[in-house]
Length: 337
Image (cartoon, rainbow, N blue to C red; front, side, top):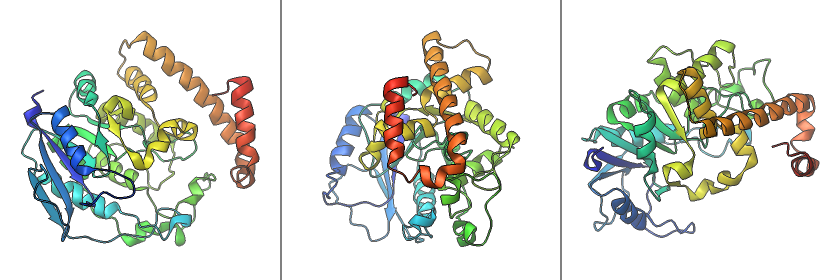
C-alpha cells in the first residue's frame, strides 16, 4: 500500500491553544508525518475556528454547527449528544479526500504507530472498514446493543467510509425516544439508562449495514436472534476490530478504558472478533490466537451467567460499593476473569 494514497481526516472541534489535557495537536501532526510519510491531512471543523497557518495541514473544511441533541442517557440529558456534529464533520471531510484510502480520526486522538495498515492487509478480503474495540459493544454482555461499532478510529477505502457516514441526521424524536416510549420487556439495568432510541455508533453503523441487507435493530437493545446472527455476520464480512495498541491509537480522554475490566468484557476485543471471523469464514486460524480467544470466550460466558443472575437485584447491585469488593475477591481467589 502506497502511503501517498492515504488521507487522514481529523474531525471535530479544534483548539489552537494547549489545554488542560495537554493534548498538542501540532505535535500530533508531526508524529503522523513521521509515522506515515507522504499521507495527506484534512481537518474538518467548525466555522469561525482559528487554525494557525503554520500547521502542516493540506486542507481545512469549515462546517456550520448543527448543534447538539439531548444527552444519550437519562442521567446525561444535559450533556449534548453530538451525533449530528460528528456526521457533518466526518462526511464533509471525507468528501474532500482524493486518495483511495482514508483514516477517520477524532481531533483529540493521536497515532503512535501505523500497525493498522498491516492488519488491514492481512484481513481485508474485499471492502472492510477497520475500527477499534472501544466501544464496539458486545450485545450479549452488559449493554445489549448490536451494531454498535466504535467511531474513534476507522480506516478503509474512501468510498466505503463515505458510504458508512452518508447517514441522515438524527431527529430530536429519536434522541428523546424513551421519554414517550416504553422499554422492551427484555430490557436490563443498563438498557434502561438510555434516553435515545439508538446509541450514536449504533445509529450510524446500522444505517450502513442496511445498505447490504443485514437485519439491524429496531431499537437500541433489540436482541432478537436474527439480529444477533446478522450482527456477527456483519462483523465477519464488513468490519475488522483491533485493540487500540494494535492500531497505534492513543486516546487520552478515554485511556481509562484500556485497563478497565468492565470495558474489556463489555466490548468486542480483537480476540472476540478474530474468533467470530475465523469461524464464520470457515478458516484455519492461528492456533495460539484461537486458544486465547476460546479462553476469553469461556470467561465471558461465566460473566454472562453472573450478569443474568444478578439482574433481578441490579438496581441495588450495580449501585452498591459491595459489588467491587465481591468482584475483587472473586478475581483474586477463583481467577473468575
